Image (cartoon, rainbow, N blue to C red; front, side):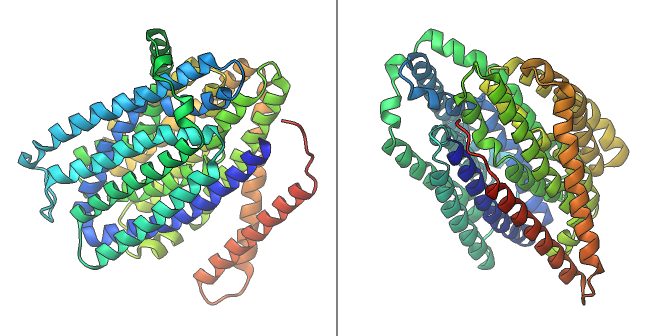
Length: 488
């Protein structure tokens, strides 16, 4: 299992890096060809429609947690909850599909329209279908993740993202705009669902599912867990979209363009930083519940890894952020750099403690997770409107960052210590020490890279990146050479 975990995490990171490159190119082309007004409207619609993910109620996480237990001899309860969770997602998918079709018929009468005259109702229908399929695909992906088929998942995602990116870039070059791109998103979401479903059926999804196993009691159990995890999803949605939605309605769609640019980079940040966390829930769930020492050791190691990865990304954003924005976009909208730097601080602190979510969920500490999420959302709601009034669109970044920092720095370490018996200072030490060491190493490498006489800033940045790559390879090689094989 440990071997699958490591390989899965590495595959995740490699796949995400490819997606990052493709995503940045597609994002840039859409911004250039849509224009700021249509791009802002597109971003606002994306933020609004992605609320569909809120109604996932943590069912995907629940499925991935239950799947490892399906292979155990006494699996009746796990199979009952698994089937109930899966069929609940199916019912939600059907319900929202009907609502989406009905809603789209009335949207063309609104004053809010695209400058390119793309029919709003049809665009919403296509983008909504995209998000609905992503939502339902989550249940199948969770099943595959629980079976540690991370390689298969990433192979499909790599193919889908590569094909979609190339097609979008090609269509934009030939003058196609908003409507055509919405069609592409819907088609490829359907293809990803189809491919993953076929894989899941081949490894036994049909046998693991049982409609007869579902009952009123199992549904109540799923609802009870789902309501608590709903706040986690709502919190994640608020982090990603609240600033865009509230900023867009308060200041206009053009004003949110720099926020969307910085937000896109933060999405990439989260994807990379949580690449390991994605499979930690089934891994933690598979450990013997009475072996708390092994569980806590694994958790501390995961915290150290998450901290190193998160601070490494933050360090590069802090040092190279302005340079990268110019290289990426050439013409960078005002306030983009400041928003990026501010948001990076909050996301760094949140992602450093990313494995806490997997730990809470795997050990049914959903009440604790719900409480942390509620505190963060209350802070965001309380801060964002005063911040917008005082600082404009930059204020949304300040509000978002403060709302993440306070619960993660003050509340979560105490709750982790109490919930799992991990000494408070051991937990803090596992975060602070690798954070300081990682930032120091990156900063030293940057100073050394800048001391090399080169013709331009691009060459200096390239040397800096290569030096970081060499150090990372040395660290990985050292760990591999001195690894100790232990039973899991």
